[in-house]
Image (cartoon, rainbow, N blue to C red; front, side):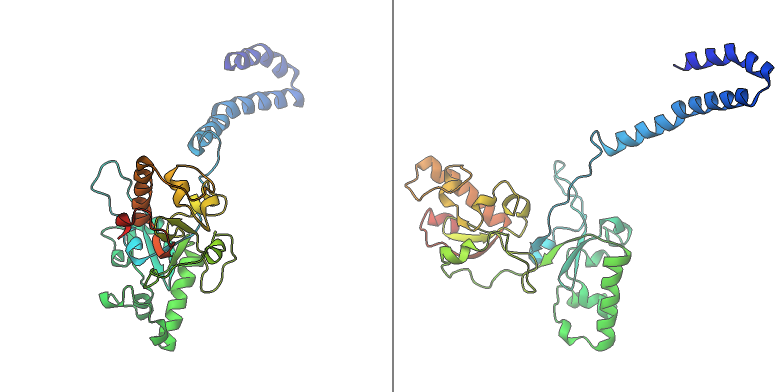
Length: 290
């Protein structure tokens, strides 16, 4: 293509210079601009497209989730010991709201001046402008004086509006006891589609597995929440569906030894990732959840 452009210049340039017309100068300018465009602009656009990915689409972030304090503690940006594991992002909580501060890793990442705050609730420490460890994971905000409350609000505005740190969830400690048997009618309304409330800004997503119901809003929103591939199990006792590896409602039935083994594997996943909130009333492989 470039050879054709320069051939045109070589053939036509003498004619247009002899003509000494404004049209000639315009043609020269057009040819020069075309050469610049194809050698620079198009190359830059192609590189940008490659950097953005083949389809140019950004990865969709996960919906906000609930965190226990022990779950939050894992998000400090510290590289894992295992080589096949990814380095976690850097999260911290301010008055129960969890922010992703990974873009501020120089401050909050390992070795940073505020690294002690990561993976923790640090609102009280920020309000008092203190590095006292006893103020971390402390939610006694009513004990703050007026000036401290104003300071805390300033930090919240900074995180939310000036730094634009993404909000990834809320800190919500699990119930003190999960021994109460929950009714199917009660559980059915906890499928993640219920409107947020002041007490539950991130709705519960409850799934039954074995003898317990679990709240999957603690990390399982992309899977069991609205629009997730397993949302049909939310608000249900999914014990038999999990055992039979079926997505949908499965009636209670006898399980084979193999199906019990599959269910046992699922229960171990739920025990590791989610939070018990009550009992199903089932007595299926009780030993796995004792």
